Length: 283
Image 1 (tube, helix red, strand yellow):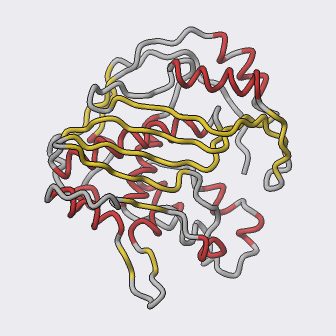
Image 2 (cartoon, one colour):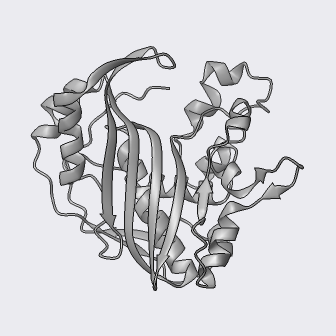
C-alpha cells in the first residue's frame, strides 16, 4: 500500500499534463514507476483505501492464460472488463478485422498462447515457459509477451501490461512484468493482482517456491476526471494491512488452468477496506 500511495501522491505533486488522443482527455503523467510484491510471503497487493474487486482481476488473468479472444468468454468466467473495448470502441467497430459482437481480435492472451510466426506456424509462449520451468530450466528467455506490433491492427487494444519474464534462482521463481501505460486509479490494482497471482500460479504448477514479483511501469497517469476523487478521497484515507491469497493446491498443471479452474479456487483472507470509489473509466 505504501508504494501504491507514494505513486499516487507523486502523480498529484509531480505529474505533467498530457493530452490523450484516444480518449480526448488530459492525464497527469509521470514516467517510470517500480513496484515490488512479496509473493513468497503472501502479502497480497489488494488496495485497502478503497474496495477493490479482486475476483474480476483474477478472472481476466485466467482468460489471458487460456488465450481468450471474445468478451463473451471473459464474461462467462466472471470478468466484464472487455465489454467496452470489444463493443464500444469506435475505431475497432469500424475495423474490417473485427469478426462481430464481443470479438476482441488478436490481443493479450491470443498472442501469449498462439503467436503467429512468419511461416504461419503458431507459437505457444506460455507452454514453453511452463515446460522449461517444470524441468528446472531457465534459459534467460522465459518470456511471455503480448506485444506484437505487426498485429496491432488485428485487435481492439494494444496491450498495456505487455511482457512477463520469469527467472529461476535455485528453487525460487521470480517474475518481472513490464507495463507501457497505466491508469493508476482504476487499472493499477487489477495489474498488481494479476502480476502477483501470475507468479503464484506459475510457481505452483511448475513445482517451485514463489519469490518476488517486480512490476515496472513506463507511463503512469491519472485522467483529469479522476483527479479530485484521488486527492480529496482516496489519498486522505488510512490503509489497512495486506490480506492473503489462498490458491487451491489441487491446481498442479497448465492443463488444470486451461480446463476446470474457476474463481472458487481462489480465496482472499483478511481483506479490510474503505468504501468503493466510482472512478470514471475511459475507453
